[in-house]
Length: 159
Image (cartoon, rainbow, N blue to C red; front, side, top):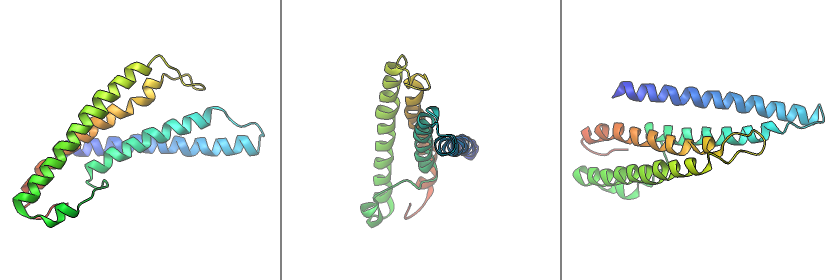
C-alpha cells in the first residue's frame, strides 16, 4: 500500500509541478505581451484558467492522501477509542460515497455531455477540462481506502 501511495503522490506532484511551471511561464508571457509588446496574448488567459482548475483539483486530492484536508474535528476530538473510530469510519464512507456519486458519476456525465463543446480560444473540448473532476474523485477514493487501515490500527486519538 505504501508503494501505491508513493507512486500516486509522485504522480500528482509531477503533474501539479508541470501545470505550475506552465502557469508561471504563461503569466510572465501574458504580462510581457500586454505591457512590452502592446498586444496581449489571447491564449494565455484561457490556458492559465484551465491550468489553475486542474492544479487546484489535484491539490485537493493530494490533501486527502496526506490527511491535511479541511476538517471540522470538534466532535471527533471529544470521542475516544471505538466511538472515535466509528465516527471516523462513517465520515470516510461519506467521503467515498460523495466522491463516487458526485465526482466520478456526475463528473463522467458532464465530461460526456461537454465533449462536443469547444473552448473559445484554445478549441479544446470542454470535456477534457472537466475530466479532472472524475480523476480527482478516483484519487480521493484511493487515498481514503489507503488511509483507513492506518487509522484503524491506531489505539486512541486519530487525526
